[in-house]
View 1 (tube, chains in turn blue, brown):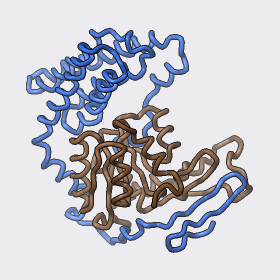
View 2 (cartoon, rainbow over the protein chains, first blue to last red):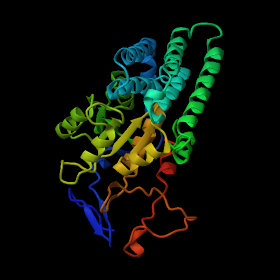
View 3 (cartoon, rainbow over the protein chains, first blue to last red):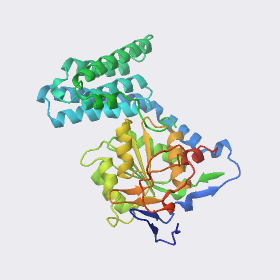
View 4 (tube, rainbow over the protein chains, first blue to last red):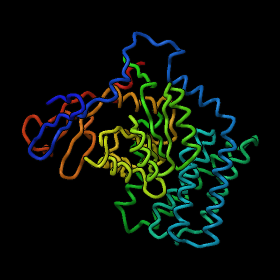
Length: 195
Length: 181
């Protein structure tokens, strides 16, 4: 295979495709080191930097939760349309992605269940508003009552039950689409999620 | 042993969520990066990409105006900008199989499902810097080689045509990246 020179990509052409070796602009950042001391560990430094932010996580989680509640209220007031559906989905999706980092992993699981409900119900108007309410209220309760003694055990049961009800609902709504149903009930594929 | 001099890398973070941008910026600064730019949607991200010429792009998937997938497709338009080869890390709460495949087929370089950690982000960046992949152009795809390793048990037709040279043998990048730092 040809090698890239200067700023020009090297292109090798085959019957129905090309292999391109772009100039390696990131080579400037590669350092060969003999040993790394703990003080030099970039991952440890980044984790320490993140830990310094941790005292803000609860208020950030409250903000995200308030956004989800507002999205639910707008949905009730305005009714189902693409905008209200998308705003509810985005609010839940952001909580799904952030909650574990912020120290509320179970809130993330409930938000994940709500995302699945929104995304995989063929006709969103079929989703019972009570099921949406239960998800939103569960997220709020998990965040605001995290200080209670039995909070984690209760939240774990609540999360499992919501996921079960959601999966049963999705199975019913997608009963005429078995291949789609197989896809949404399959485990995630993402490689090495936790690194 | 390979290490990364983060001080020599310029990053662009594109995410509509201000908290996630703050977390990513904090992690990158923790790694040692000085130059970190931010944009809060796909359109602003494309503009920032053109303006700042980042070495690595971190983008969310779900964003207003246009999303991270569309942004990737726009960046991977040969001739449309100065660096269609820029490494793109897709950070997203989506982790379903069809989503991962769609992101790969749009031309992302690495996929990182949220919740993210310092370690997982570092490994993706290490992969990109230490083990750059060639790009492949076909009638329907332009992006990093989607074959990360050779599967000796694969049985089936070779989908790339052109003879012996069309099999691109590579070391599994993930294994390399997992080497102790």
